[in-house]
Image 1 (tube, rainbow, N blue to C red):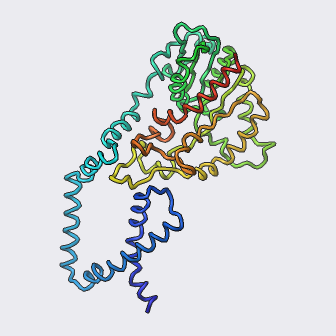
Image 2 (cartoon, rainbow, N blue to C red; image 1 turned 120 degrees about the horizontal axis):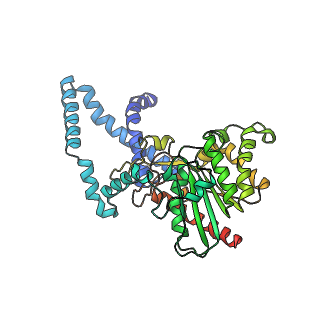
Image 3 (cartoon, rainbow, N blue to C red; image 1 turned 60 degrees about the horizontal axis):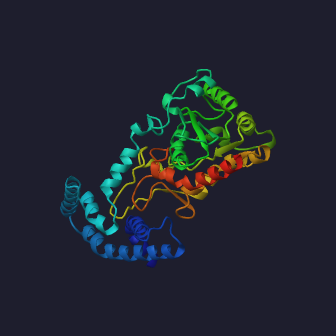
Length: 382
């Protein structure tokens, strides 16, 4: 009889359990459920299911079809009214004073950060035309907004910095500029990048020009900043004879030989995972009164997915003593141990403009690590 009773409850349990779990995680702000919370959710689920089973479910089992249609029709009518009257948005606004977050401001900020205007111009206004860099590349140029030179006013410094890569380096230059604008030791910072180009995978003409530039400029510090690489993430059979590692080592050699120090930005988690993809390619957190939908990635999942990449990168410092690895995933995943959040939970500002590019808040997360590297290397160069 008990088993039969559980069978009678089963469909209600199926309907009830997920809302209970979602509301419990949201109320206590839990990315996952510890055992104690699982037990509590299970208890609430069964108690709620028993009440529903002996009231609503029995009512509709014994009622006529007309009653069922009338109730369902009323529910759909209420749902339509809620949507047409924009009640969820209005409830958000009413809740703002309690949490001191402007939902409308956050939505506007996220939308502006994702606007192409921010990425179709040079990273900052003081980054000017670079005729010397153009000459060092024998006139090669494809994207002028990704090619510029910044020389601080009245500088007496001697340290030269080169930033190369793709659109990720264009964004990173914004935060490097903020860090360096008060540094008296800097002579110049040059940017040469090309959107969507990845080392050893595509854009051979651009990479040839990039190599030519670093060999002729001979910068004190070179930053190589790109995003994902399919080749470096492929499974490894034998590191000694690994083709992707060998190709990447050959790619790095000119930068190592012509720069006093080469800073390699490691790949960071991208929001084109299951959590990010639900937001339709623009990371605007779905804002409900209790932000029920969590947008994050398990950090261990990222490490597992990129295990081959990190094994290859681990080999580089042994080969190149002047190569500095910049751990970019650490700052992005430091807010809560074990998780990488795609947005700032204190103000709902997104960390990503799309699947891979960081917003200004996202870049700010990297400021401290960039600052440590720059201060250390400039001191060494001097």
